[in-house]
Picture 1 (cartoon, helix red, strand yellow):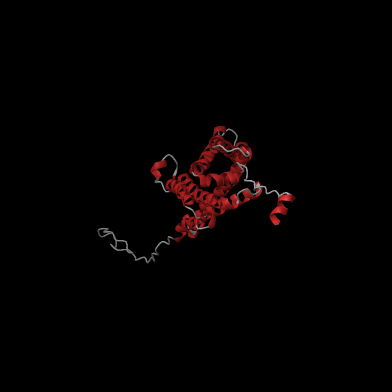
Picture 2 (picture 1 turned 60 degrees about the vertical axis):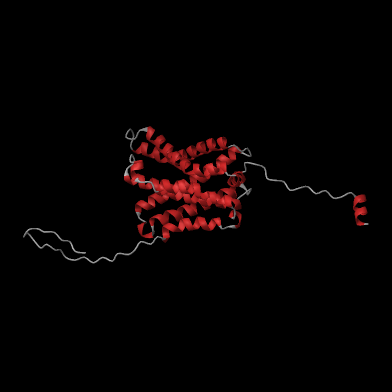
Length: 271
């Protein structure tokens, strides 16, 4: 490339040439999360038409994550990009967790929590790295990655707490309200200590309402990401049964009781 400008006798019109090797962008890292979801759909428990409805909530979340900046122009550029990265990565993680819940059905609550946490965290990080690319990882992306990891932990704990509070009773409104409450409490426990340290170090400079606003934004963001997948579970019987089994919101089907025949009947059958 060569810069050219007519300076009118003040200097050379043509600058020194600069050589730059332009490499075509590799789309595979960004396609990898989509291919991972497609691979999960090929698992034996997901080989049915109902399982493919997972594309609807994932498409909603991915569409929001790809929204142009004027849609949320009130947010600063850096916060807007962080918001999009968080939403997009969590969407893929939740889709993967929803597809893997068949392997966690009616397991011990601790095992179900750990499995959900690993599925959500692993696929969320995969989607996050895929969107950024290894060459794009830096200090800012590291901060977003840490916040993503915290969000994964908060969602996993809140989902488990909501299932524990609801016990074996299922109701979409009851579960949703308890989930919002659990998210708010867990986020308060996470953000609260940092906010208290900030108040102690800078007394009077940070309004108390800022801390509650941060908890509210974090709660709304995580619940908003969860909401399309919850609606899918409430409306689709396939995913509804999986959610109930994951959170122990219903009784397991007891095996039929087979009583041995009476001695006289057994002797008559044998003869």
